[in-house]
Image 1 (tube, helix red, strand yellow):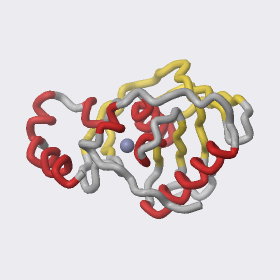
Image 2: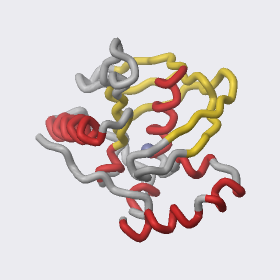
Image 3: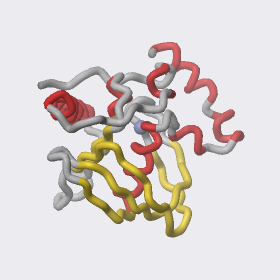
Length: 169
Ligand code: ZN
């Protein structure tokens, strides 16, 4: 297995609503393995399958770069049960928007359920950076991008940079 190319803003796959996974079979395991290699190579914190052109409801989160006790987590067919806590503004980037960091407001906590790589269901209560990355990656499965959370004014300010990203994609 190996890293696959990450698509950039402008690629229509990033705007699709991703498809449910029927079964955690060898194809899904290979996909997750490739996503893991892709994320490591890109040195990111999270990656959703649509970012490597696979419109399936799978994302991974790896916070080991910022938290040594963290482990890579796999979310298949995730469902957000509840978003709660305070709305917090934090700087965010996205591997599909190289070099573009923006302050994004999101709730501080999330309760999510999903299927893991062994096909088992689990539930997770996340806060801090983990909640932030989960919410960002979950959005990708709905065709939503982090810039969609910006105010109209902020988006106008980065219009030129977005156009440039679209041209190279
Ligand atoms: Zn992203």
